[in-house]
Image 1 (tube, rainbow, N blue to C red):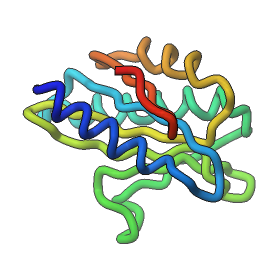
Image 2: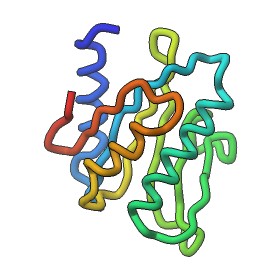
Image 3: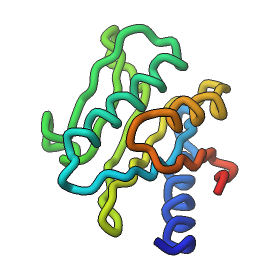
Image 4: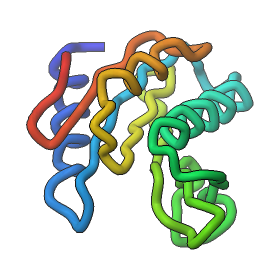
Length: 138
């Protein structure tokens, strides 16, 4: 995949983080998974969300998915707190040139680099590019 295409995705993700009601941080997670590995992609999404929730220290969370509501796309998932349905993270799964990329963003915690490292250690991850509203680590 060309670096220009990836940089466009990173810039688009950066724009998702700007400005909102809450400060957000995020990452693009490049995976080795193709469409035949959707169950592993789903597990990676859950594991990445769990890493975010653990760093956010918000207590128990659950995943609200695109197949739960017609307000979301099928490949869109959101982590919410059990106590109050508070936003913790959101993820879109994008099939690009044969493999999936996850666009993941969350409430900024001040532990961005550590969280990116946590996600890098998950199964199926090829590369993680950390993204904030100020830029990305390409």
